[in-house]
Length: 105
Image (cartoon, rainbow, N blue to C red; front, top):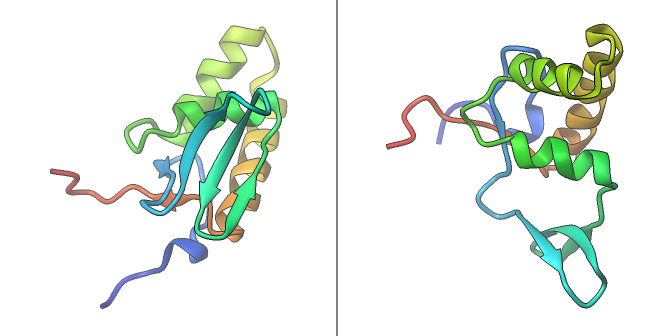
């Protein structure tokens, strides 16, 4: 296999992030919270992270996600952008986020 691995993702505004095939965002009814399930790992993101992750569909760019959140919360785009990119980069570094492939067919 060639190409970059998802763990090497550098999150930028042009990135189109998506949860990798091995990770699923699910609502845990027992605990009443959202979790990311991956083999032998569970991550419980906070409410804001869940909202951002729900927008990571592999179609929207990080810039589009930032624009949407800045409009929704009437907040400065620069502040939202810095926080979104930092959070997504942290998840990418931990293997919970990947770059969408060009040919998703």
